[in-house]
Amino acid sequence: MAGGKSRGRTGAGKRTRAPRPEARARPAPRPKPTHPVLGNDPFARGAAPREPVPAVARAGVSGPIPTSTSTPAATTTRIPTPTPTPTAPQAPSPDAARLRAAADRLGALEHRVESTLEGLEHRLADVAGRAGLASAAGELRETLARLLPRVKHALGSAIDLARLLEPPERLDRYGLDARFHERAQPLLDLLYATWWRTEARGLDRVPPAGAAIVVANHAGAVPWDALVLRHALHRDHPARRDLRPLLDDREAGLPVFGALAIRLGAIRAAPEPAERILRDGGLLGVFPEGSAVARKAWGERYCIERFGRGGFVKLALRTGAPIIPCAIVGSEEASPAISRPGWLGAALGLPALPLDSLRVGAAGLVPLPSRWSLRFGDPIDLGGAGPDAVHDPSTVSALTERVRSTLQAMLDEDLAARRSVFL
Image (cartoon, rainbow, N blue to C red; front, top):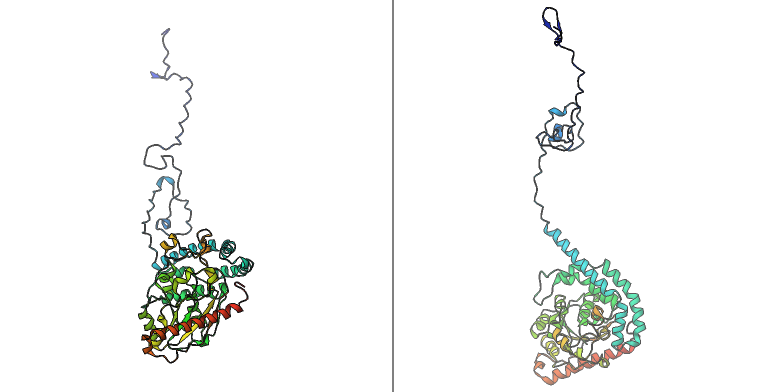
């Protein structure tokens, strides 16, 4: 039929499809987003493919893990990593805590010692000059130049200072801490042998056993001579006698030093403990001048004050203990003090403060390195007086003056023979 659409039939009534125009180009597939999207599969969320975790690793076995190449990513099952059970931190043992605390205290103490020793030469020279020892300034500088390296070495290597800070465990009936006394021996020996270069003579005059009373001169606001006398007999006497020095109430109550002196073997002066020590065969150290020597003028050093009422003589008469004089030279220059007491000294319990201790800092509390000498004399003859003479004031007074004059004569001899205060 003319003008109609040709449908392209072929054969007996079969329809034929007209040829289609050229097919359109199919658009390229959209790329997968690189950012994670919602879903439970980590690979569909954009995570990097992971290799399967071997059974060895899932079991928690350490070591190198072999690489697997046979398991496809689609069939891999993610095994959650087990969360380790938190364990409570172990508390440090008491020994470790104690050692750590001791080390901290030692470090702090060493820092204080270094601060004290730094510039000590100039500050002690200032103290000596203000104490009237300006003429010996050159000797003091030379002495310090020799001593300070030895002192630093001893403090740094030979002394465990932290052990001295431990609280006391057991005290005897008079307050002696045996453990503290043993641990303080290196420090006491440093003062005795290195700082003061002490020379002890006549130690054989002190009996090796039995009761005896050692009577010595006294000096300074701080009773260093009591510790030196005790250390000399404990260190240099053939029998290593254990002397117990008596301190009066003012000295025993000194801040810091009083308590340390008691722990090191000193005893607060009183008739009962003194007589008990002698009855037990002990050795007693007596300083009849007492703490009044701290008020003594500088020009009166080594001039022995009045011995009071002779309490030590009464002790000797009651117990039969011999009286042995001991002249100590060097103690006056080691701890010079001003003769004017003030409100600060009274508040601290000190009748006189060390010279310019506040101005020169810790060096004002460090004793000067004077050279010491101790000389023990022959026992004093009591003239046959017995216990009944205790009630005779004239006899007691005469014996007291005999001891004082004998000790003064010994001091005068040793001072005349001394070549130098420091060297």
